[in-house]
Image 1 (cartoon, rainbow, N blue to C red):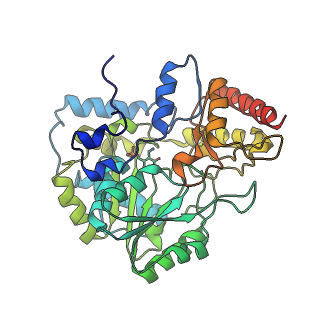
Image 2 (image 1 turned 30 degrees about the vertical axis):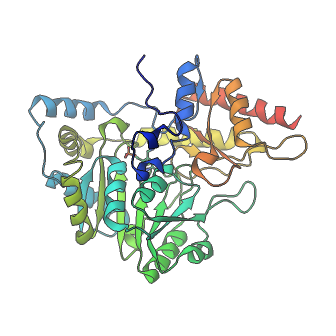
Length: 395
Ligand code: PMP
């Protein structure tokens, strides 16, 4: 075994780490990964990636690209034909064509570039709560001030929603970015068209950018999917291939938006990531137009239906509308008190079940994240353990 990649608390400052990096706490999910390594046959409902392998034709195209010598850098923005293909797909889906496209090292790469190019120290960014933890840390690295808009349901069993009055309250003259993530990690909510249109109108009025993380756009079970691309005056859309194609390790994503901002992101990419991985750009360009992922979509829709129908009612879950996550409530004990996240996580671990506490995504400790990116047998086992836990806490 090598040395674990984690310093003891307080050691960072003594070895001279920057203040900027000392301000970042390690991900709450890290503890779960560490625990998982010690467990035999865990029921793992904590996973943030699809459980399927990439389509064989995509794998073949990637192997061919490597064998055919497509191993050098591409131009910074990525292959022009792939840029155009992405823009064509965005225009076909949303009825609006962004000015330009940059291929990035995953959506993570796009987030780093977008935040670095837009946020000055002291600028404010408005993030959803709960939300994917990377946003907050990347914004903090830029010296930005993080504010949040609460999307928690008003009552048990209701959906997570964007409350426009709440967004309006949180916007100030310093707001530079209003951030949207639909479908959401961790809640599984898909913002309605009215929510997206209203949020964009507020951002437009404030002269703010809307940065939209659409990495789960393939996994949308709602009838309608609205993107800020259509409604925001200044939109940076971040999209990805990791989840859709089952290739999170390939590090492929894209950003679209106005030329002036994308040009700055391209310059920064030149001096950081250089380009998105070349052979995978060629592979996606070649194979993507011929791949039919609809069986995967149907499969995940069934998984969503299974969770929504079978999760014990004590968890107060509204059916997730997208992504492959549900964000149920922590159950209540015999006295009617909500069980805290740590106690629930420990009880789940004692039964070999891995979930992620909601506190990893939120200021609030009232919910937990359950991923349904797992085979059906694992989902059934997980549902059974969750039912046992709900009953045990209530007894
Ligand atoms: N955004 C969200 C909401 C995510 O859940 C993830 C991955 N867990 C990412 C961005 C990053 O994805 P990638 O860098 O693989 O494209």
